[in-house]
Every structure is written in C-alpha cells, then in structure tokens.
Amino acid sequence: MSTPAPVPAAAGERFLDGKVAIVTGASRGIGKAIAERLALRGAKLACVATEAKNCAETVARCQAAGATAVAMGVDVSNTKAVGELVEKIHKELGEPYVLVNNAGLTRDQLLLRMSEEDFDRVIAVNLKGAWNFSRAAARSLMKSRGRIVNISSVVGLMGNAGQSNYAASKAGLLGLTRSVAKELASRGVCVNAIAPGFIQTDMTAQMGETAAQELASSIPLKRIGTPEEIALAVDYLVGPGGAYVTGQTLVVDGGLSL
Ligand code: NAP
Figure (tube, rainbow, N blue to C red):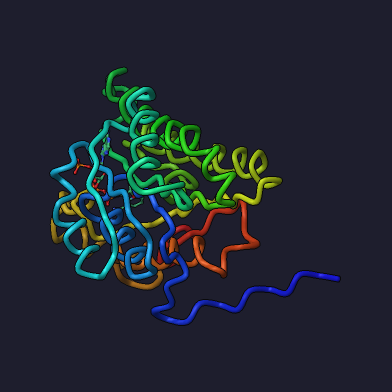
C-alpha cells in the first residue's frame, strides 16, 4: 500500500512548530527574510552571521512573530568553529531539523585581474561554509529526518563575466547538494538548492539605479525579485510540499535564465 501524500500547508500553518532551524547569513537580505518566514512557521531559530550582534534585528523580528530565536556569530569558512557552534545550537535549542546555507559574499573581478586571495575567500565562504555546516549538522538531521536548503545562484548555472570565483562557488553548491542528497536520502533527509536570479539586497544595491533598471528590463518578468520571494521557495522546500523533493535546484529568477 502506498503512503498518502501530505496535505499542502495552509497559509500561516505552523508546520515547523518547535523544530530547530539554522539560517546562515541571517543578518540581512535573503537570510533575514528566510529566518522571518520560518519564524512564522513556528521554528526555533539560530540566526547566524559573522557576528551575533549583526542578527539582533532579525532575532527581534522573529521573536515579535512569537518564535524562539537566538543570534550567533561565526565565520562559516572556519570548520572547527562551525562544529563548535552547531554543538552549541544543539545544546541551547535542540536537534536541528532545518539547515539553510545562505551566507555568501562576492569579490568580483575579471579573471586576469582576480587575486588568488579573492578566489579562495569566495570559495571558502560560499562553498566550504555550506559543507562545514552540512557535515556538522548531518547526524542531527539524520535523527530528525530534516531538510537542507543551499542558496546557490543562477550565475552558478549560466556563468557571469567578472564572477569566476562566485559562479564556481555557486555551481559547486549544486554538486554538493546532489551528492549530500544521495548520501542522506536513505535517512529521510531532503537536500535541495535554490538558484535566485537578481534579488533586491545589499549585495545588488551597489549597482546603481540605471543599471538596475536596465537589468530589470532584461528579465522576462520585468522586475528584480524580493528576498521574501526566495524565503517562500525555502518555505516550500522545508514544508510538507517538499517532502518528496531531493537533489533538485529550484530556480527563482523571474525567467532570467530562460
Ligand atoms: P547580503 O545582503 O550581502 O548578506 C550576506 C549575509 O551573509 C550576511 O548575513 C553576512 O553576515 C553573511 N556572511 C557573509 N560572509 C560570512 C561569513 N564568512 N561567515 C558568516 N556569515 C557570513 O547577501 P544576500 O543578497 O542576502 O544573499 C544571500 C545569499 O543569496 C548569498 O549566498 C548570495 O550569494 C545568494 N544570492 C543572492 C542574490 C542576490 O541577487 N542578492 C542572487 C543569487 C544568490 P554579516 O552581516 O555578519 O556580514
């Protein structure tokens, strides 16, 4: 006899009630919107950024939504420190159920001008950071039959001039996602990636109004996306709708990569 499919979550349903969620890069932009969305679902949140104080506003907003939330600081590229932090989260909040690897940075430059340091740093934060957290939380996620969501980028699918380091890190995340999905599937853990297009955050704010308008007109849906639209994709993947989805890349880009 086959298992019945879960009923899709109604708006406002607290399907993460009491479950522990780790969101990296939660101080602003996409990570902040993800933390707030998971708070509405009832999750107990570990909001991580380079320094705990950077997540103060996110934590306050999650708490205002009725959730338990704590701010934590770590450099996601530091394997030992990430291991210790995941242990601390386990002790303070309980067994992690959701891990959203969202922390990321850019150090753009054309290939001929890019320094080795800028290549290594972007790979270390964007790619190794996700590996660090996935490995440190894997045992807990197997116990809780949890979910991992890696925030990649359409640039990881399409490439982008001036972003060889960033595109390589985001493409690497897709390989990491598929491999960890295969490794953890037998333990009931679903592992997926989201590939956002251009989203209105600090990361994209530097481009200026004219460039932003030109870019928006080249997107089939004729606008830049919002952090909340990425948070809603995470909401789907960590909710009942995502229970039979693993190893996939959900592209949320207004059609940019078409
Ligand atoms: P953002 O506004 O620049 O925020 C980046 C976040 O990552 C901050 O919370 C920052 O913490 C954290 N972070 C950076 N380096 C870290 C480190 N070494 N250790 C711990 N935390 C670190 O970025 P965003 O635009 O919201 O992007 C979030 C994710 O989405 C990134 O992975 C990005 O590549 C991806 N993405 C963004 C877009 C876009 O258009 N915005 C498109 C595709 C993909 P601090 O505040 O402490 O620095």
